[in-house]
Image 1 (tube, one colour):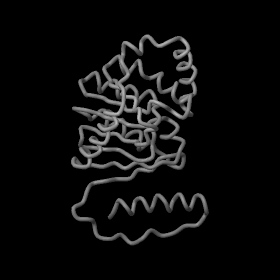
Image 2: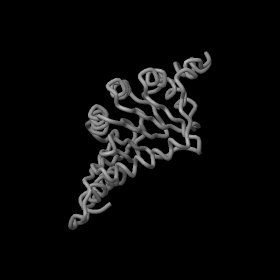
Image 3: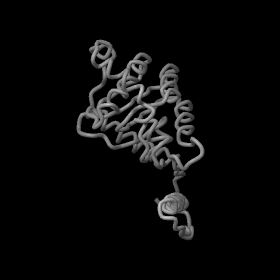
Image 4: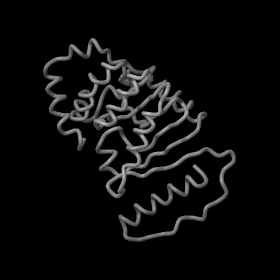
Amino acid sequence: VEGAAARCLEEVFLQDWEIETGTGAEPSPLGPPPDPATAIQFVPSGPQEYDETVHQVLLAAIYSASDEICLTSPYFVPDESTLNALRSAALRGVRVTIVLPAKCDSVLVRFASAATFARLLDVGVRIIRYERGLLHTKSVTIDRRFSLLGSVNLDMRSIWLNSEITALVYDESFGRELRDLQESYIASGRPVESGEWSRRGRRQRIGEAIARLASPVL
């Protein structure tokens, strides 16, 4: 990362450094813009931020989609507004794909995530369980033209409670490359079938109901 975007990253780091150490520092001088340049923004989020920029950008991106949305995340415990945005996109004909790891290192998160599956599958959202280890990539592509990626998981704790940073990339070439990476995860995964999911057992359903109550802090 070069140019003004790198300066933004440095400013976020220096802000966090000052919060932790009490020592401030000036950012480096801004150099000439790279050539060719890609439009990119970095948006910090967490308890030290006073707005919900990342959440609002995510919602706006989902509602703006006209062709396809693809999301990948190790953890998926969306709030109601994000869940409704994804459902709305699917209902208006947008292809929505969510890629999650088949194995999750948190039992509560696994159940809380699964609690959203029925409402998504019912409207045609495709859910893929990646089967080649833990999926680390946290990414969203919108119509292969707009991308979000960074340290933010698609869960409420990550968006509101943890200090994270997200890159917003406005570049079709980058969007295609990221979408190709997402497609490689899909090829290494197994879809959750709606009919099979509707026959899941009582123990699974009880686990989902309990975990969903704790979802705001997962």
